[in-house]
Amino acid sequence: MNTAQFIPSALNFSIEKATYTWQTPSNIALIKYWGKSKPQIPKNASISFTLNNCHTITSIDFSKKSNTSEIIFELFFEGEKKEAFKPKIAQFFDRIKEYCPYIFEYDMVIDSMNSFPHSSGIASSASGLSAIAMCLMSLEKELNPNLTEKFIHQKASFLARLGSGSASRSIEGPLVVWGEHPAIEGSSDLFGVKFPYAIHPIFENYQDAILLVDKGEKQVSSTVGHNLMHMHPYADQRFIQANENLSKISEILQRGDIDAFINIVESEALTLHAMMLTSNPYFILMKPNTLEIIHKIWKFREETGSKICFTLDAGANVHVLYPEQEKENINNFIVKMLSNYCQKKQYIFDNSGFGAKKL
Ligand code: DP6
Image 1 (tube, protein in one colour):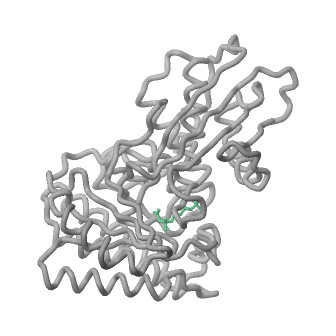
Image 2 (image 1 turned 30 degrees about the vertical axis):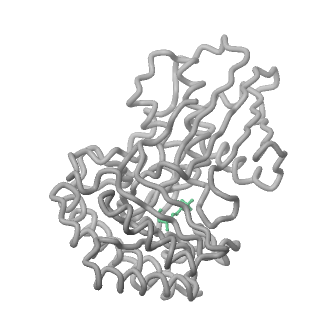
């Protein structure tokens, strides 16, 4: 694997001060990443829809410093200093320092905010780390103006991955594959790539309503969950299945076979949670209302012929997925029926989007 391509050579440190602001989105996986080896290499390839409304906005102020032996940064979240978030970012900087030696040259003040409520159960690591990665790449581009846009996206995804695997899929959109896979040209374990084939119009501007079932802290973090796949009795079979499902969904997205899409996406969600149920120690992240919602979705589909379906991430919230043409009907169903199973009736209407934006 060619990681040397991401170690910069010709940098010109003539810049004294700079500030960059990026808005980067969250994403929702259709084929799930669950299981990895070091350093942040996925056990199978995954694919996600990039979201549009759920995003992080991050600014980094860089000021040249004289002592270049340590990495120094301050962290603000929604305007307030946040010491609690610092260790995760410090670990991220430590993992990327070889690829971004310039982080030793500048004091960094990071200021972040999310468009979604804090501790809504929506993972902010994907949007948060991809936003930092884009700010770093803006600085790198200024230190080396020869960088191409393609390289910047690739390296930003590569860096974001080292912070959180799913963050590698939050740079571009509307569909991103991460993990080397024979059916996806250009795919890599090191960074996410935009799905390289034309998709059927039914999957354009796909809708994702996020139902906030449980906003509490997760009892088991993704990191612990990924680790439990090392000793897992079904792990090897699961990794094979995920890669097979990725081949299938690639065809499905191009052909527009929405029934086959529903079947794979729901099966992937339930399989992810089945891996948690069959880990040791075992754990359950779904809540009673997660199941209520799933049953209501199935009933609605059966009664109306709608193409509504669901997926889950590593938590109790439900992502309801549907084509744009059904937006009015399904939004109504969510407001009138499914919201009753959400904490404080909260949900977020979102749709597939195009990735990082410079502000
Ligand atoms: C269930 O990307 O949060 O959302 O690499 O340890 O940060 P780390 O894990 P993370 O795992 C995401 C798991 C998932 C599935 C997915 O997004 O593919």
